[in-house]
Image (cartoon, rainbow, N blue to C red):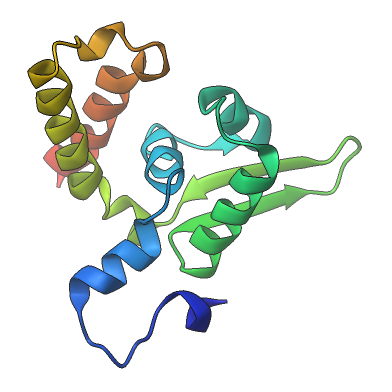
Amino acid sequence: MRSKRHDPKSGCPVEATVSVIGGLWKPLILFHLMGGTLRFMEITRRIPKATQRMLTLQLRELEDDGVVVRRVYPQVPPKVEYELTPFGRSLAPVLLTLREWGMTYLRSQGVEPDAMPTCAASELLASRAKAPAAAD
């Protein structure tokens, strides 16, 4: 799957980054996973505009890229959890920078970011993401 999305011969680091985290839903998936392990339906509820099929495809790509780990528990009903890998957690500064830029942009457009219902947990997630870095 990787060969269709990224040409490793180009050597462009920006292209490589966009190849891994680019897309409509990947940054949101990654941002929500910064808060910890989530089951598939929890991700679906946090990103209500994304279809389950699209989330599944995006999660598979993130898994293929080594950014997300998928754990399947052998039980009925099936239980599947997603979590950032240590490599995936290294994206936290990038995602937090995107969040800060987005807040600045929304304010420039006269929209208060905290008023956005899908961003209600934004501050909590950002503080959790910064906590491990501070402990290092």
